[in-house]
Length: 320
Image (tube, rainbow, N blue to C red):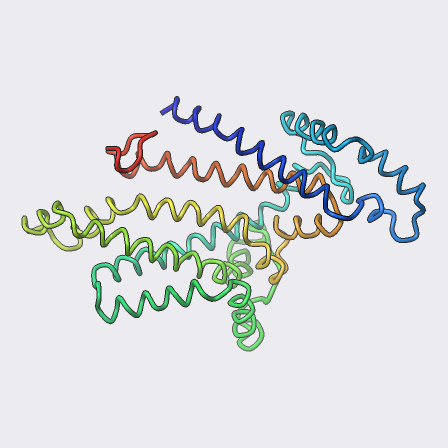
């Protein structure tokens, strides 16, 4: 297992190298000068040139990239041009609301999706199955930002049950924390729940047709044990993969939802930094999200062996 983990960690470097080059290149070819953004429209060309030199923007792009990469290996992602704080500190500050939102949304999605997928699979072809799968199609079709606006209108404006925006840290009380996350989490969880439910149904149907399920039923095992003890466990690996990818998507893709509900998360940090041409923050944040996504996939791979001991690390599911 240790050798597998080391191998996977080493495989991160080519991925991160490509991502870093792409990020750095796109940012620096985008029109706009951070020095001009900081000084404003009334700044002279000499003032902009002086500040650009102080910020290191006068250096060749390859030299700027090398300086940034060297800083990354020293756990130094640079200093924000506008907020004058270390980028790593800003990421840890802004990632907390995003993580809370992503975790809450993921919990909601899993709680809804797994039972829906199991019920649909065990009632294949029935009205219940068709109705549930129809609902998942609707869930996949509705954009999260549109659903968020509808929830805000109904539960925030008309019924006034929930706050229409903002964020409260968990230090202010768990219930208060959750109250501000319910609507944005539901808007994000809907699409993910639909995807997980469809994967659960598909994977369960594949397992339910196997001979060991028929054998278990012929031996008189209770249907509940057959479904949860045999079928679900053997069908869970593809579902786990989708859940892992879903969580990574929630962390990286909650930008619009955070803006709609005015949540000071990593999404707002990226958007504000793009508008300001705050290069170090954009580069550091995107790199951090990429690393997080890859580590989530690594964790999912390691969980394979926990859920199904027959699966060996480094082998495919069919390489048993």
